[in-house]
Length: 230
Image (cartoon, rainbow, N blue to C red; front, side, top):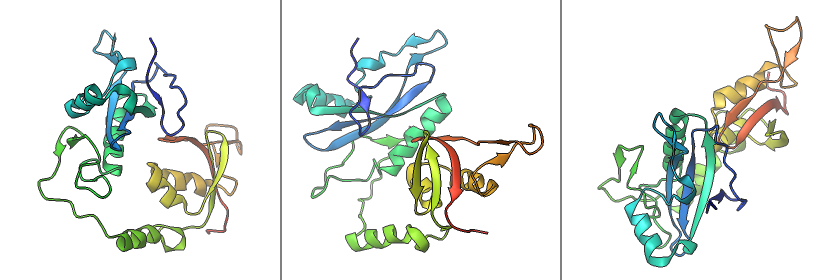
């Protein structure tokens, strides 16, 4: 059965890893630029009954009402990431819902909610009080405060390998915060040795192994400072 899902931001056809538990997704109404963030399991119950995720269109009745009204072709169905167990799946569903302010964000120039979501994590509902967004000047100052040497955890540029590809970030801590990685874990790898590796006590003396850290964007296999941080 053909699926309507594609990879988030890439538009590449989604090929599932059914050894995983499920995925976090975003469905976007392209006419209104209004979206829904949720998660879906591949199988249900102890008997692992297929969840029919291929044709799934989200759990929001308001979202599905609009799909029925204007047509499925007016929507994008994107997979953000897959996760290996229920705990990780539920955590990252809430993570992206909070990251994108699904309960308070509004469509630019209107008072219309930017997301169909009515709650986060099954328990935190849309607030009664109206949301007052930061001014553009405040947003700019907040953004600048998180970058480069203005960041309280700034330790200089770092090199990391994400899914085997080298990349350089201006501030490792800020990059981790932005992309859903635990900064402490990433920084710990960077502090092991200058070349980004750590001595494995279980191996013969002096032998090194490459630490790895899996997160929302993929697996980090090496972190190395590009400046002296001693």
